[in-house]
Amino acid sequence: MFGEYIEGNFGNSIPAPRLPFAEPHEPSVPERVRGERRKFRTIWISDVHLGTKGCNAELLIDFLDNVDSETMYLVGDIIDGWRLKKKLYWPATHNDIVWRILKRAKRGTRIVYIPGNHDEMFRQFSGLHFGGVEIRRAAVHETADGRRLMVLHGDEFDTIMLAHRWLAFVGDAAYHAMMALNQWVNAFRQKLGLPYWSLSKMAKHKVKNAVEFISRYEEVVARAAAQRGVDGVVCGHIHTAEHRLFPHQGKDIEYWNDGDWVEGCNALVEHEDGRMEILHWPEEIARREQDAAADATFEDAARVPEAA
Ligand SMILES: [Mn+2]
Image 1 (cartoon, protein in one colour):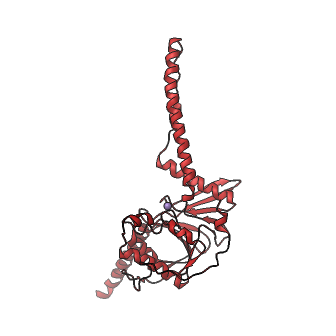
Image 2 (cartoon, rainbow, N blue to C red):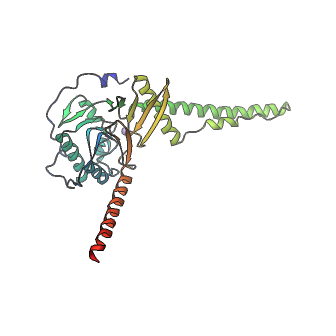
Image 3 (spheres, protein in one colour):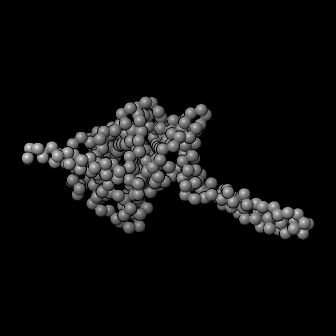
């Protein structure tokens, strides 16, 4: 399904265009250096939605200033072109994020940008490099322990999901038709002196809430990965960080969603040994602050005997 995007020659390289917001000389929020950055083999982030008020730029700046990796995947919906087309909203902090990403590329991090549906205007540049950022339609990532993971934004499955929704709707219409038929049949049965016959069990199939939708989406994406013969998939798009395993022909297909920077503020990381983990950044900040407070208390306690 994505073969034409994944394989092929991506060796082209042309100079970066001068976008109005790209690469200012200094960011408005200076880079913070708190000792060593947490180093990972790989980092995946997506659904940042720069150019919208929903984007949690401050938390993402904090994240970028505290972590480092050999490779970083930007898994789509980084810039919200849809919203920007309607109204230009571009605060300095959003510029700071672009600055930090380009700076990482310069420092030697391999950056792979896989545009999503909100930044689909960059999809036309697939296969090209801009300022050290490689633009791809999809990618296959190999983990340190040799697992092959398909990386894509995930809107590719919207049509399939819409078909599911249409099927659900047809099911719904059929259900209502059967309920009408049920009434008619029962009126007839009553005349013949037969007992009431119910279709109430059908109601069980009428589950169409968000949880069901997300669960089905995860399954559809994992199945597509299984069909491509890879060990798993990393995507974004539905703003729900998650790790699930789907059994397929005697092995488990990994489903990873790196979440978003609108609500959850999550990132997916791969450690040096190939182990993967979803980071919930607000929790990481809380832990860091607790540790700092504990250290301060310890230092205070250590000072007491000297003072006495
Ligand atoms: Mn999307």
